[in-house]
Image (tube, rainbow, N blue to C red; front, side, top):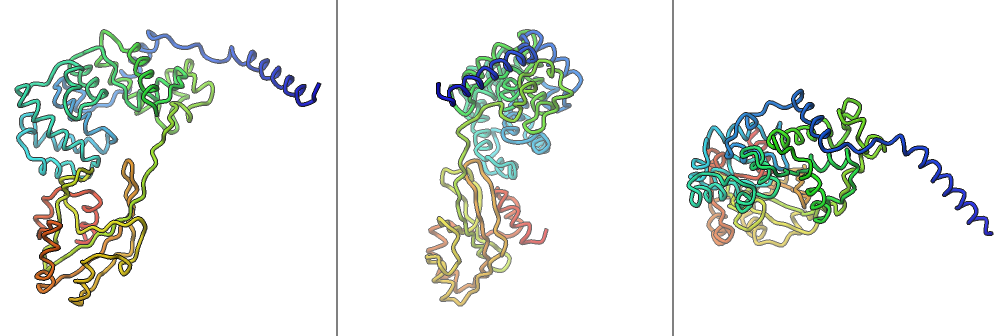
Length: 387
């Protein structure tokens, strides 16, 4: 017999023997009744005191869920309080303007959430007389409300037995039960959701939903989970197999596209010319400066744009801020340079067509403060004004 084959057979026998020896050391899978009991007992001791936890008002629960999408509680809580103070009801929110809502949302990112928030509020007022639908299926029909948000509102506000499954829930269930469903795929997410549905507490789905969210956020954290003090440590498959870092399984990681922005701040005396973004992108409805985008970083002299012809003709200087800003979005990585040009009346006269083409409008400092702006622009303006 070939020696390689003999060695392979011996190696396999050793592996099988070790597996038989180690198998009894692994925990038995916890049943759904014990899982709920341990989870709810943990929640009684560790639940977070949050304003949307002490209400059954679907408006406040919905608002908190939208704000907390892709946002940590510590960052989202001040925004929640400001929104409730300014818009205490869905009717008040619906009667506002998109620009006012975007301005209040400024700094949270993912601005489509704010636009959808406004649109959804208007739908609830116009089609439901300002009263939220009371079940998961009806909530899911509203713009900006996906499966997780619909389930969270239905479970917490109306005690519907439905699973609210977000990243925290994926992580908790995958680790404790050793689930290897790939949540980077629609099939994997569907399987995980089906599993999560089996675990929902039928008598108190509201408390259960909040408990599992908090458990994922506080105990079973993405990095360095607190396994040694965990109520599930005697049952958790990931803990016993040292797979906390690989569960849940997620392929199809997002590849961030690199984009190179050059912003030009056109300033005349105490006003700056800005434009409203109207294209369907994440910053739609917000204000920024004259923008040139290239596939790679270029120096100003290498750029081909009518702006530079007018700058040279009028003997103006372009002041470039040395630091390149980096701004991360969900699917994009922005490399941004800012340039400042002090313009003159002669330049303004010759550049009318350019300003009209890009809808550049003059704003003074006080007016700029009221405009909704991407946080990238807001932070730059603070530096520019020395604040």
